[in-house]
Length: 379
Image 1 (cartoon, one colour):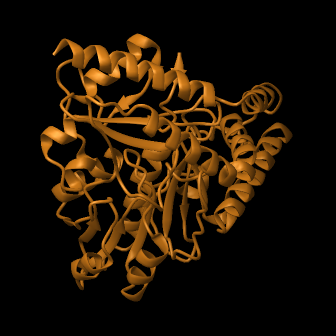
Image 2 (cartoon, helix red, strand yellow):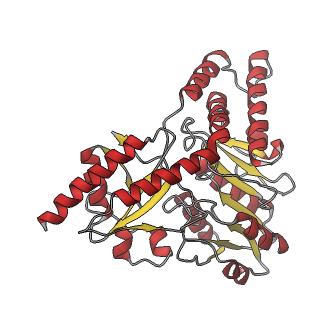
Image 3 (cartoon, rainbow, N blue to C red):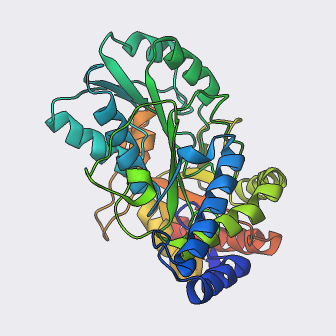
């Protein structure tokens, strides 16, 4: 099967898998234990922390390892809010955020927080004027993602961070889709916290990290927690973290060249699947985007049908939302950028990865041409 769903998850690299196996079997100690086996695991953990900090232009004491992006989002937001609860109870965000952010904000509303969802333009990008107008004296935090998982929009975190810094507002960003794909500079963007994940960059699932600016005050979500300097409960997954770091060290040197390669593959794919009797449209910005994430709509056909047909022909893609057969929901991203619910239900996403080849794209083009011709000839 041709796998074109890398934005959902990636296969583990051979090197990351090998490191995981070695650490799990040879350096299996609990990093909090005081004996030598525990100390060895602690050394691996701290070296891993330094590496993550280096990739982010941050400080190692700001790195906390977690079970992934979703947990990082939850803990970052709650920890910062608990540490700054006298500032106010107003939060700014967008309707494009990952479900882990959206669900956290919904829960916070039930706890008395007021959430302002600022609009985005047709390309999915935050308007700085709208952001400025949303700021209030009691605004304590803004949560705005870096890269959109459906249409690939890259937010201008540096400009957003400048606006928020002027008002001393905490700035959190979900960077799960961008870590290892494009540069993330925490200091340049005045970020107070971010979330990243291992399984998006060919590392193991169930591992991620959260960065919190050491200059900011935060309080543990679970009082009395001892692991990760009180940030998170539970024995630290040292083998998974070591494999995560290995995957990051493999992907960072090639991330810029890979985005250029994806740009060419993307152009070839989008042009190749066009036809005389059907209309396929790219969704999202024309530039400043993640080139490996390709959002499309096929006029007159629900995305779920396209996804199932691709699967039948041996190509793995996704729609804008997880769904049951016959129960597809409209893509929340497309609705947020002004598309109708009907258009949003026509959405599909193809996402490229380091194993994607020219031959994969050529075969995918051929498959699209075959089943679309059959579909429109049968109408």
